[in-house]
Length: 155
Image (cartoon, rainbow, N blue to C red):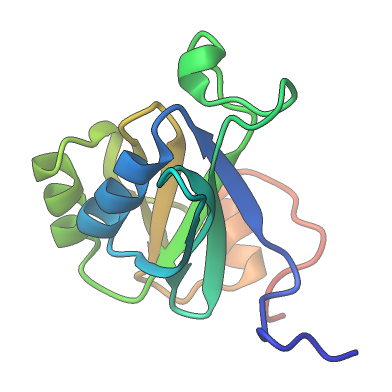
């Protein structure tokens, strides 16, 4: 059966002590849009989804002993969310900082042609934001990064 929600083939979920506050904060600080918000009869979050362009993420509570916020895990992250921006990465970073994000890596040009910054959200999840700033081929990226690359997005 075709997915009636037309969801992306791969999505990820983030777990929070306070998922309702996380929804509000991610919307305000990072520019995601709430697309689904399901609550029980007591107003507790059961499931939520947010979109950014054609991608989506799930925001949830710590509903089982095998899912946890970094707050419950001594700050350890087991995943990082990667978000590709189309423009204004510096402005995005400053807005996130203004909203309380901990910027753990300032915007910086990378050898493969992107500018990247990293931020921690209100419960310590790490987010990496990238913006293409230069079109670089595989050979140039290998030379600039002093790496060997198998596969490449375009070549």
